[in-house]
Length: 154
Image 1 (spheres, rainbow, N blue to C red):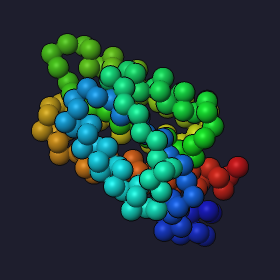
Image 2: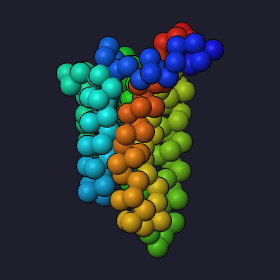
Image 3: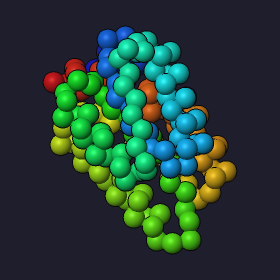
């Protein structure tokens, strides 16, 4: 097994990787915190600043089309989706959460590129705040590790 043979530490070496990040601006206080945590973790993992491309889009439903444009460029080892969807009083929450999540997964499969999905779906602002740092860091680690896993498989 790659993970067992190489060890997790080697899988988290981002020195030679190029990472694209798409951040939704809706619920910007949360998504800015997600980005800050993700960006800091990428740097801590050795990803060079010049190899991190960050774009913002209006909301979670726009994240997939920006990810697709990045995937089509074939310049990235992994991509990261950042956003925050907080349940409201209408069915809109389910539509946005389901569509953005399935679109991110489909893009990853269609383009065979790892996409760490850190589009939070929470019941309220408090839950989002409680998750913003950890999920941002997790997204960075997932992107770096999966870039290595797919490189090894390919």
